[in-house]
Length: 197
Ligand SMILES: [Zn+2]
Picture 1 (cartoon, rainbow, N blue to C red):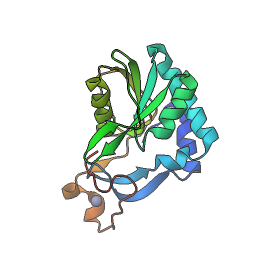
Picture 2: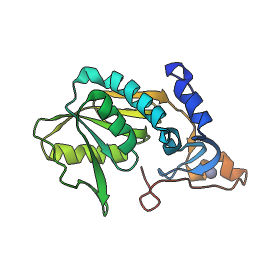
Picture 3: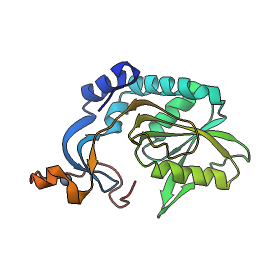
Picture 4: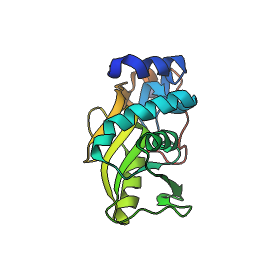
């Protein structure tokens, strides 16, 4: 694990219990000795507001016209970034297996949009949200997340900003040293019916 951004987020993650250590099955199917539950970090509105302001500061130069986030993970942080940028906020959500804009949300052709997520690992949910916007003619001009777990591979093809890079090691089940040691694996949180993020 390494720290950027003066350790501010790491300190908050530990203080809020959002950073867990153990043996976890991630939604990607990989195993890890650590897990971050960002909802615990963002449950305090003052903290989520500060995180939103810091991320907005990194994305403002792109001059976004709106913020888009995949529900549920991106909703709180996306909203806070939109508040700080003073632009509209919308979210996509799953309808069956696919991602969609519902509730009357629409994007304009040519609209300049930044994508937000709480944690980006493979970026699967964000990429699906990106496709939804692009199918309607909008442009995704940047992406942001509180935490970057991509391992340095930006999946978006546009500028990607985060506040903290988290490099907890992950393992395929077959070569997981924690499995080999017989440590019970737990499956935390999100998307139990949609593995593979
Ligand atoms: Zn394991």
